[in-house]
Image 1 (cartoon, rainbow, N blue to C red):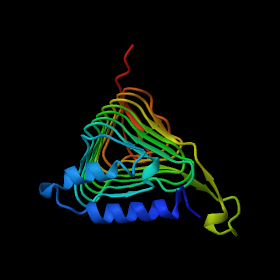
Image 2: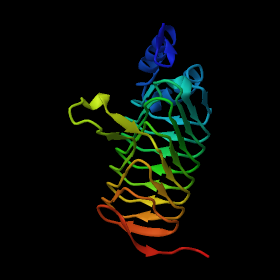
Image 3: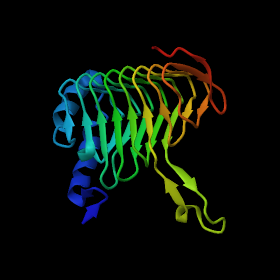
Amino acid sequence: MIYHNQTIIERLKELVLTNLFGKIPTHCLGLEIRNFIYKSLFKRIDNSVYIEEGAYFFGTRCIEIGKFVHIFKEVCIDGRGIDNHIDIRDGVILNKGVNIRALDATDIYIDERTFIGNDVYVIGLGNIKIGQDCVIGDNSGIFASRNIFNNINQNIPNNDMTRKGIVIEDNCWLGHGVTILNGVTIGKGSIIGANSVVAEDIPPYSNVAGIPARVIKSKQKD
């Protein structure tokens, strides 16, 4: 019997091990114990990963975590579903309450040295790619899916979903409370002002702000 992308036995193993060892305080050898035990669960996880107590993981066989990644309390990474892949590269920092979820046939990729602030949501029905050396401010949301209501008499689950995906290129800065909507590409080196809603592509090296976000200054390099 299959539970999404896992057999029942694999899911039980994941539940037992993450509940037993996921809450041990870091200062009581929790870090070392988690790094040892979690190697049997994840697709790939490096020995140098820092995982605080109270971080939650689901669908771990679809999750890869690189060197020197920091994962703080109340982070939730959920790879359950069919054909998912979550890849968190070297030096990424996931602050308290970050929620990363793949919803089916989804790739979520966070490249090296990117910093994601408190209580950020990264939710993919479409693929999500976040580049190197990005900073994503607290309470932001990256949502790679959107309902299309073809028939107002249908229930929400019966309407179509678009899954164009989201790309945030290298060296982008997203301020506090930014929302990135499905189908958007944010060009390299761009800065998104606090509380902006980005619904259209942003050219490289742009400063943008507003609801919806608009380019207020371009620093395009030749």
